[in-house]
Image (cartoon, rainbow, N blue to C red; front, top):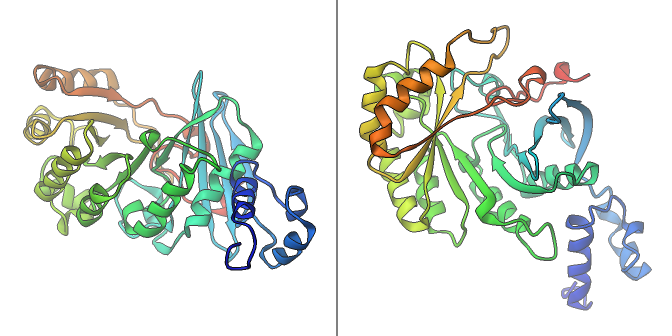
Length: 329
């Protein structure tokens, strides 16, 4: 607006209209002079995403399949709790990392999302419902956030602007498969977002097999980056651990895992593996697995949680997002 010789507050009005009020057309911005609305016409339509399908579960979890202007698709999930909600955001179309337990990786990598496409996922969900109120954002959807670094950071800043959604960065979590340069770079940013690292195995041999990115950034480097991030930001690092019964949950594996975890203040989030493709849900005894981890880690006071699967019946749970038209209804 300043470049156009207009008052700066008109820029704040546009920003608030897009992000706080979630307007879909310029004509809804009645606080702007008509001449300015006409000058902004080339930017219509304002939404960068189009909702193709909406699926929900009995517990209120909602998944939207979005169409992007270039013909690609992504998925976004809103998870309600009793007094607040969490939105799980995508940052890429597909993913280049090809982790064996993740449906997104099976798509391959198509492109990064723009910062606007990341933000629009929340704006459109907010139009649909504000109850319970949105509190948490987790960058855990399709893609590896730290491989779309610049757009990720810009979106985080946009989410926290007071004229917009005004979401607390302390309630935002970036989940990474262990992109060490990205973790170190994010540690230097003037941001207060939390870090979650998908570890999933305590040995390089196993992690190489299930997460090929480990060949580039082995466990020791990932842990060292986590230590630095925690020292810079405080709080706890969350390590995510997708359970592969009989493979990464044996006593021997858990004891090896402990040697890594005791090096940094952290929480361990155990994730029952969700079925992808034609896989069927695991029949593992999750309580017994949890007890095994607890028996090894309790003396070190490492916070331990077993993630309750949300949205698995609509393929909206961890590792299931694939952004395919054939998943819509």
